[in-house]
Each structure stands twice: as C-alpha cells, then as structure tokens.
Image (cartoon, rainbow, N blue to C red; front, side, top):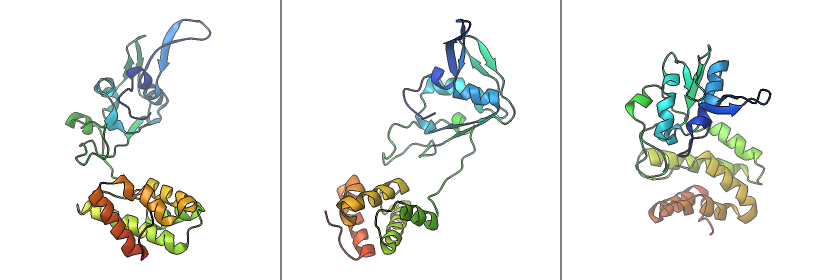
Length: 219
C-alpha cells in the first residue's frame, strides 16, 4: 500500500464487510492482515507518511516475531503464518528531510525504527543506467548517453559532499531522455533538470552540463 496522510486503518488492516452469500457482517481483510494470514510479504511504500493512528494498530505485526493482528470490528484475530514479513520504503530513512525534498513525511520515532532493519538502496550501476537509456529509443547517441550518466554521477557526488542541493535520479534522467526527441537534448535538460532547482543550483547545473557536454544547453 502507498504511504499517505489519509491512509485509514481499515484500508491497511481491515474492517467490517458484507459476506455476499450470507449477507452477514464479516471481517474484510486489508493487505496487512491478508499477508499475515497467508505468510506473505507486505511492502509498504513511503512508510514515513503513515499517520500515527495506523502505526498504533500495526506495531504488533512489526514485532520480531510478529504477533497476531487484531481487527476491532468485527473482532477478528489473525495469527501470522510462517514467512510473514513487512518491508517498507522511505526516502529519508525516517529521520526527516532538512532540504525539504520529501515534504509530507513524518520523522519516525525510535520505537518505529527499531522494528526495521535499514538497508540503503543506492542508484543503479552505471552499466544498467546506460542500458535503460538505450532502451528508451529517444534517438540519443552513445556519447550523449554516456555523458548523461556521467553528469548524473557528478550531481550525486556533489550532493553527498554538500556542494549541490540536487541529485539527478533515474526517473528524472529518463524524462530528460524521452523529451529530448521532442524539444532537443539541451532544452529537455533545462526543463526536466535545471528548472526544478533554485537559481544558485540551476547555474551550477548549467555549468556542469557545459563542462561535460562541451556546450551550453539551449533553453
């Protein structure tokens, strides 16, 4: 399930439903309860956007080993089957985001973070990024693709060193490639990359483009 401020407990855990045969009220299992019953894996996207009330009813499922999930109405207890696992994604590791890139997320408290093992997923390897850009078939040359990946890596290292407040992600790079066939390589860089930053960062990104591509991007 995707993370959201408006995520309801019933949407994740479950709540009352109507049996289509008996027409009686039964427990309608949400994805968390279903995964627990079947011994499956639940992947929660952007878990730092869950509202507090959702965390309150999911703590038992996140224990190690997981405890039974309780649906209050109608009262139903779902014991977790073998293999049940909850995974989650979060851009800021649950610690908040000072630059404001991922607004809307909450700082997760220590009790919530203690229930997860944190794994950092880095950017794709250079070879994989080039392969995907070639598959887009946007008419880019091999040199352009190589330079795109090189530029992306420079922004990421600059961001890590606090020299830039921007890191070029793969989704943005794909948009840059796709729109290049419509408005040109340099113009696509301006509208999909440089224009999404503040003026100071934008100037640095234009200069970086010029150093790597050997020309200024056309607006």
